[in-house]
Image 1 (tube, helix red, strand yellow):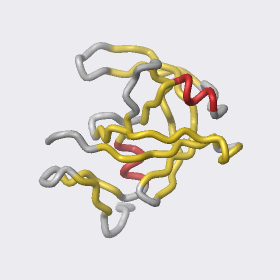
Image 2 (tube, helix red, strand yellow):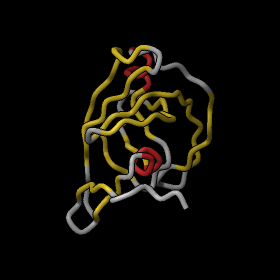
Image 3 (tube, helix red, strand yellow):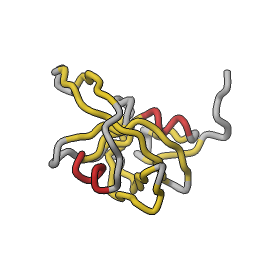
Length: 120
């Protein structure tokens, strides 16, 4: 399909003025979002727990995660953010996309809004 990227702003829910902004890879194969741990710690996002994740190469790796406010394309949601390695490319996962009614249009490699968010 090609790569789709979008500017995302992650904020500390307790102090929204503390934020990290970057260009995130849209990854519909990833459930959660990911950002470099050092950037998340700078804005006060703390590790809330740890979870095992399956990487693209099939390897299982445990990462810490925190909670953050997620803003992109004029929408706001909140969710789990994986505390990635320093050189990790930021990822916008499918949970954040679906929670605000945005999907990937594979034909033209863009993000598009659904007319309504399904509640069924």
